[in-house]
Length: 344
Image 1 (cartoon, rainbow, N blue to C red):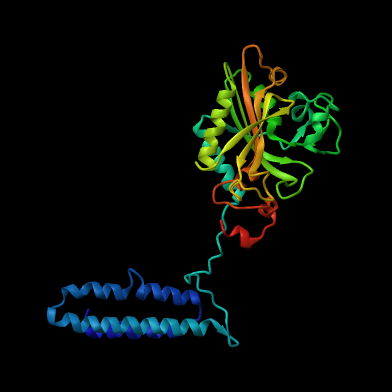
Image 2 (image 1 turned 90 degrees about the vertical axis):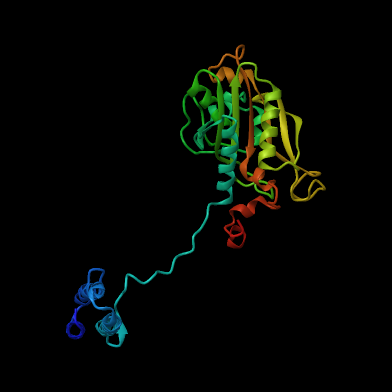
């Protein structure tokens, strides 16, 4: 392309740009002259066919034409987009202001980590109803109606018609309600379940909230003993809390396990010296024990052939004792304070 042809191309483009009346027409001209297959690029591609002494001269003319067309396009765009002194056009190619990205809640992170740890031991993650029948929450777990052991759970009852077989409807106070459901689902051991779900109790203080998350472990097979229970809990403690934290078992009583234990972990806030969160340097995580024969029977499993262990810990309370997480009031996890949540 000769110098004269380039000048004519430039003048032609400027004339057409000045005559546009819509943004669409202007965009079509931009593509026609400055697009990847546009006339300016075509002229640039022909430079290789020119003698060496002319390449720099013609190249400068092409570049000047490109700049002139770009300036004309911008000026006409401003002109077309201004009405009564106000800009009305919108350029979709301008980078937008990106909204702040959030992240998962601390409890969600804890649930994912707990699930992965038990997955390494072969536990299968399940989840059972949060609105449950009395039978699964209490009676099948060896707690008949009016049994004093029920007082500990401070249960929320749902105001609805009771079931002729399963009794009243409740907001499940513990994930142990999934034990018999899992036995009925599997029918024949082995069972290796980890049930993580929401639970509800009428409690609120620095270490309790009315709605909390709990993870329930259940293992049923032949020749299961307390040694297997302790080994499982020790493995979890080392993986989740760190090597410096300690676990202890205290004899206790639960209606659905025999023998039963309370599981404690050394406090990560005061490092065992004692604080408002813990009891003499220890924080109670939850219960554990060997599954009561009556529970196995209610789940359709013969206790003379199979035995097992179970444990249930609060996710929030467990997370609070994690190394480096110094939270002295469990309620802060749910008060939506961004100053707190943004730290994680």
